[in-house]
Length: 137
Image 1 (spheres, rainbow, N blue to C red):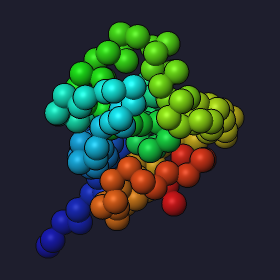
Image 2: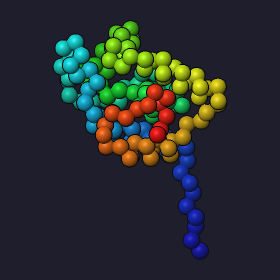
Image 3: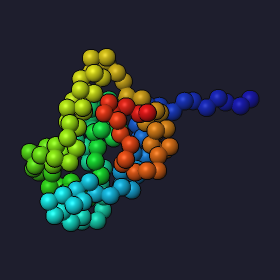
């Protein structure tokens, strides 16, 4: 008799979503390109505006940017400069992200990793499609 395969665990889905999302951002151009004379240092990393620990927006494009390792390191050490950069390049993004987090917290929303996996796997237009709500389309 053939055994039924179990549905993947949340831990497995989260790891897969991390992998797909990370690849998507690493395939993008550095968001700092052309900003105040920034010269990209090469390797692109998946940078978060808010902590990855806030699971409701962990994989949301609203909460992430592709940054070269040098810019990522600099902005990690200089959070005020990072806030200024995001506001200059993406006006209103902090407010939209904070509103999305607040909405998810009030609704006790759990992360839907399957939905993000599907959303990222359908896109090959790196970093051009995020909505102001930060939800998968």
